[in-house]
Image 1 (cartoon, helix red, strand yellow):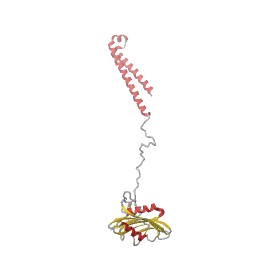
Image 2: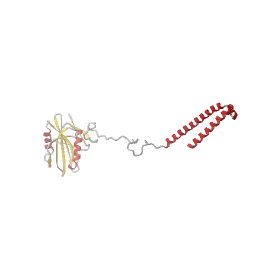
Image 3: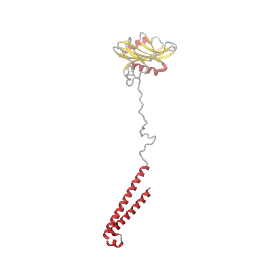
Length: 266
């Protein structure tokens, strides 16, 4: 392609040369005697002729340069081309990070940071006797006694299974005395009872609490329980969770969900 451009440039130069000769002849300077007699005019036309040739050569050179530049743009490698697998290259198909949404609490609001989310299928119940609202699994059965209000999983060999949650309200402000009272009313006399001393801790909502834990044998199966206190409205509320000893993580999760869903009722 570049050789063709050069050849056309040479042809244009020859054409300009012929035009210059014709111009000289048209002014009556074509014969040899006349050219010798009009030396000054010949020198002037020679300058114009050289100027015309130079301009044509310049135009041809510019055309060749532009053409070469276009070709180079087409074939040159690019240092900014994104390659597949380049970790610094944003992907147009990459969507936003998926964010998990925790189930709402019994009141409809999302749990506070650090709180255990209430399972979505749990239902809220308010008990007028214990003056408390809390949530529980919908298929669990209610049980009430002189200690408090409870919801337990249906049993296979008896009415209730090993897992349950409950709330007991004790008037006063002594958290340890409230735990001792619930312990005596709910777990006194059970088989194989082992009980840990009352200890201060922090619950899943970040509030200070008193805790009492223990274990015993129920219908031939080892079970564990935990009780934690919440002070509100001039009383101590005791939150109670029980489950199979082999499912300690489940017991902790149940206590967290119960604490999140709990609120004192008027």
